[in-house]
Every structure is written in structure tokens, then in C-alpha cells.
Image (cartoon, rainbow, N blue to C red; front, side):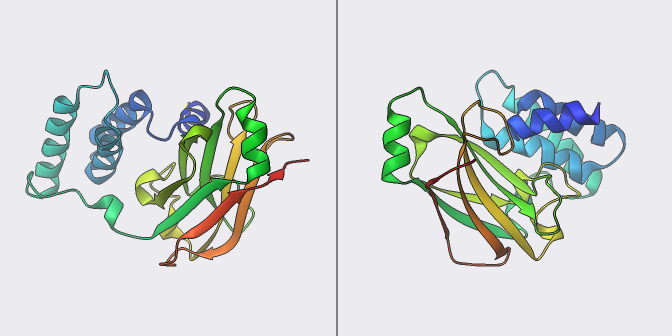
Length: 196
């Protein structure tokens, strides 16, 4: 089950169904803070077909059980490291991509210790670029593995040929290694290399 959840979140960290279920699971387990984090992620994404009002009520109830005023803004994403990443395409890659259909772009941070599970991840489309995005604890794959849990991270931008997560031959990439998670400077990632 966990593998399926990880896969769903790797494809879309804001997937409403997965995050709502994880929120309910944590709420039942009396892990109210984590429940709020999952539900707030869906509220912030504001996707069509999601009952935002019901989720806001659920967040309010979880806050009440935590002893926090239900009107207090939830600042989880504002607490902890925030890495600004300026993602763009090199002229050559932009030209190559212009000839085909729009591609999915993954921007993510991984630990420097060799583990591959992202600490934070976002999904864009190549047509969105150039764009400045922010990696933070609010786009972590799991509350236990986030940017706050490390001091440095490797940052990647991958234009996926097949649309799946991970780096595969034929994908286009940019990377910035050993970046301090407390860095206040925006990281420039120019996607300019083909993965062999």
C-alpha cells in the first residue's frame, strides 16, 4: 500500500485523492498536525472537482483537537527551509521540445546521502517555463522526509520524455548539487543536458 501511495505522490505530490486519504488516516490515528498538512496541500492546490469547503471544515476540526484556534492561519509551508528555484530551458532544448507535445517537468530535492526519495517535489509542464518555484516542507513526499530533515540537498529539474518520475535515458536535466537548504539565493537551473 505504501508503495502505491509513494508512486501516486511521486507523479503528483498534490494529488487530491491520495492526500485526502492520508489526511483521514492521520486524523483517525490522532496525528492531527500531519492530517492538516495533507489536507492543506489539497486546499492550496485548489483543483477542480475537490470539495474545498469540506476540507476546510476538516482542517478546522483537526486544529480544534490540537488546541489551535481554527481561524489561525496554517503556516506549515512557511516554517522551515524554502528553496527558490528559477527553472528554464536552454535554447537548444527549447527548440527540440517545440517540435513535439508538451512534456512534464519534475523539480525536486533529494538528500546528499545517496537516498533517492525526494524531500520536496513539484510537477510543471515544459510550456510553463521559465518559472520560479519554491521547494519547501509543504511539497514533501512524507512528513518524516522533508527539507527540514537535512542541511544540504541536491536540486534537479528533469524534463521527462515518458512522463514518469525518476531520471531516465533520453530525459533532459539540470542539477545543482550540495545546496544549503537555508540558502536565501534563488538557484538557477537551466535544463541543457540529455540524460545518457
